[in-house]
Image (cartoon, rainbow, N blue to C red):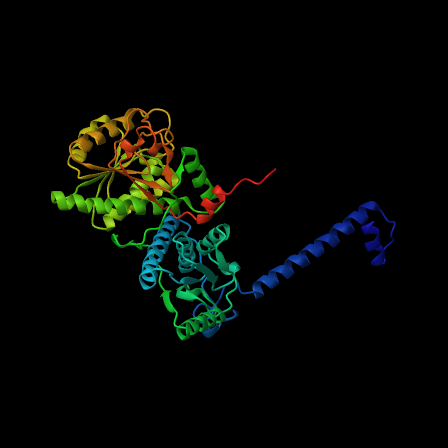
Length: 482
């Protein structure tokens, strides 16, 4: 129908030859397409594809004045490299935990009976991510804590956005509006502002809140620089320790809590592993000091498996190294066979200067035995709480050598559980490490209280891994009727 109408509009007969009508229609369509393409090209050529300054602009380009360009905030970007992302995640989690514990100590020293509330201002970048992660840790320690964004949520970078989602899932108080407000009943103001990423309006809001805090006598602490190479300071017995649940979990409970944290709350597995390794390293550090005072020196050997338990061991070794306690680290198997988070922590440890020796040949055992027999402290990170069945082959050989070294005077610290124990029954699954101290995570384990569990675990320390308290509340809530 279109070709005859076009023909009539141009003064041609409307019922002409069908071939002529088809040719006319094709010609009209071609003209329309050429005209459209030309228009698009003209528009694209007139629109600047990037921001030009006087130095890089051509004669036909639009120049952005320097005073305007300076006011455009930087946009937070996530690194493309997986190891770099993990390194930043580790720095954010360590910095948040360490500073939350330090400020908690200061607040408790100032007012032991009723420490004041904490208000945290979070920018769109990594410093904002630290501030929001601190909110989670303050809540775990029983402090009233609130987080307020310094920019709207759609301006957050990936790291800050991830922490905001965790706070929301954890039902913690988070204020998405950056509108300035006076703070009532607050003892400490903490600012992770990422100021370079804020607009002029948001910077003025921050200045106003800082001025009000000063007028109201609220102590303010400002984080103005992020370092992905951040290292935790050496621990002290006076540090505030983040508590974990006192409940005894089954093997299935522990697996469920870990899965819930990552899938429902958005907690990265790498963050959980970092916290676990830090608190275990803290206990290892104190024990190494005790061995050194008794024997004059404390050689440390860390035995790691290929799973998450081995990843915890790599974190322990990295923290001990930064605190002046180098370790001999052995991996039971090949590096290429490691789980993701554990493999990333192995790379960070080697990057820090510790050689990790893979064990894949029986000819290597004499070297391992020599190190174990000369060690003052052995860290067992071979097998985790998910172990069931029977311990065999290289793992059984390693466990036997650890127990032989303990019989000669080495102190054995087990990470999460003694390798080879059934965490439900407390019975050994064939070969089993006999630990002097077990640092277990998130909560105690039922098998540590049953059967041979108490004798295999030794002293038990229950350590936090950065879990939101809402996870424990949700797990213990009664099921709805019907």
